[in-house]
Length: 221
Image 1 (spheres, one colour):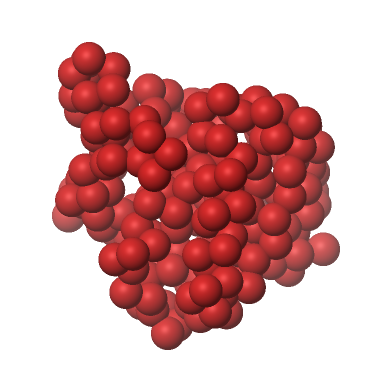
Image 2 (cartoon, rainbow, N blue to C red; image 1 turned 60 degrees about the vertical axis):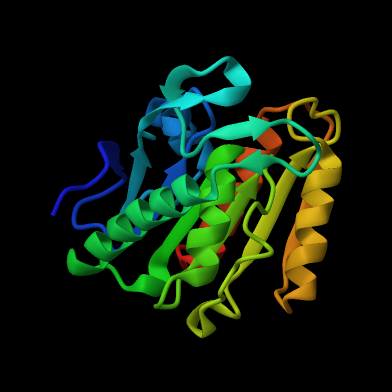
């Protein structure tokens, strides 16, 4: 079976937990590789971090330029116009990475899916539809692109969800973060929503909070 090209980093031998972290439009798996030390995981934690690289696609809003993208964005109105078939294809590729972690011996409940911006939209789709219970879903500066077509998995009805957004985000307005929260609540999911005084980025306080989420939901403390 073929898999997305990805960077893998382990915090210890024989990992018994995994975090699959998706980058944003035009970036790469290298983007979030440096955050691992800032998560302040216990010294004896053995976690495998997987940072996949998105495929290279033409992106309409960037004049058709080819770049790393989980899916095409056709227009930047508030409710994004996207190529949902491409998003679903990317979600399938991430699901394959999850399955591989399970085959490597990691309990599905010790696998967290995280995504920033475009990667977060894919993470929503994967985390809420995967057929086995996952350990958590982290959505950063993103939006719930598939809320109207989502077919939820009963296995992940209680998945821990945390949403992070910048109050001054010019790329993905904070209203989209709140809209995602409301959509989740309408689907009977529980989610925590946290904002920071930043633009379309991450900050140290956010990364440290993500570290707490990972330690708590992977039971590392």
